Length: 556
Image (cartoon, rainbow, N blue to C red; front, side, top):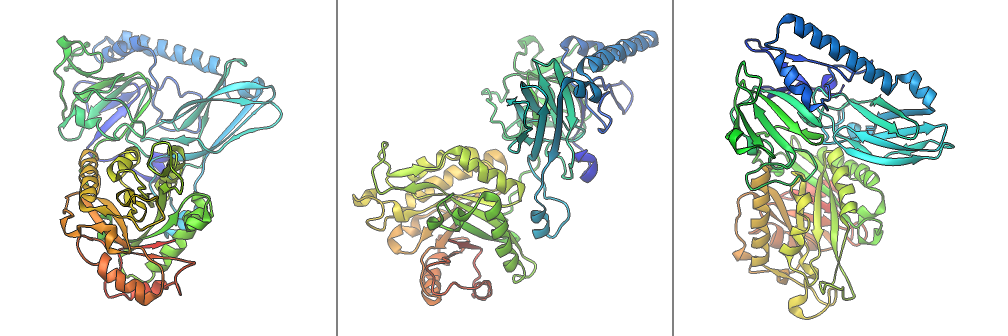
């Protein structure tokens, strides 16, 4: 399993299982493994409690007489055996006419580029799934932490799925659940080729999960805040509660809960506010949720230990930059090669490859909303988010503004900007509303007020998520592109990077680099190089020889 191959459970946080009972006066958490009898390849499975009435029976094991305890185990074993027989083993699956394989897919070129044989930490695991059935049928697919989806297998050719993703946790049964109602068949398929570390601490099952909290005292609303519950943007009440999720506390020796917190908790049982060290809690959820315990916030800038090398452009449009020359994976491989060249030149400092993705493109014709701006759809943006996540890259989202307002456009990207590796860029060249002409007819510009508004908004996201400072890049090759530079504020949690964004000779570029990238308000100097327009393109050796080396080098 993922957790056993590469990492241990985070120390001092929690122990959990789908149906574990903490016995009074002991340090062990007993595990009851009702649903994993047919998976011979998995270890340390977590039972999925779907029978709410069984919870009180399990809690009662610690105080029931030995005879009743044995009887309970016997009944549970018979019940599990019946489930196993009904679900079918591998032979039964063959008789039903369907065969399924599920494999975690990792790109070996990533590990090679980073000088390690083990893939970097991922927040989700890409899967390759193949389903073959003798007869046409509809199948339901359920992934660990990734929800469910329906598919049609035509019976003549295998159904191959490559866009599915799993969310693997410590101690989790790393299996894909596949079922066909028409065939009366279901099967739990172990995911093979798992060689990365888990991506969350506990998988909260649909039903009940017992947790023994061994970490510091932590407010419950903080324990489930932000992205603690995975990539899904769960709704939250004003008190921090999540619909369909509740936490129940049991006093020692008591069968019934004494205090609770969350959705559906009666006022009489309310009053639970914190996880306390040594406490045992029952977490009830109406769906599967991947839970990651909060870590201390990181305040260190990415630039403290590394330079960034990025490829700029728009998907599928090579004329707008090198990013448009291939798929996210192809571009990632190429930028990794360029990053490696810089890494050989900059001593102990690391180099991080990055995508610089244009998400808002200025238009030559008016748009219905009057912004003269075409926006990349969020599904396409998400492809680059996931590609950057998998490869430990950085992603910049770039808006050309048009006749829109910078803050308005940035807010449209909030779901992505809450990720710790996603940053923001503004291109004032095409902000021409104040000039009264369409984008492209004149060099536009924004004011210090625009920059300050975006900075304060990004700082709020940094504080809410407890993530490293955001980088706010502003492109500039002419003074009028950023008015009132001296009025740009120094906002905690945001680093302003001015990118010298003009093409030409090395001498001309370096002169403008001194003017714009090395002077306030720029905290992190950036330099853009053009493969087609620069005469010639500066080499990595020439860039690293600059007296004040750029923190970020961008290629278009």
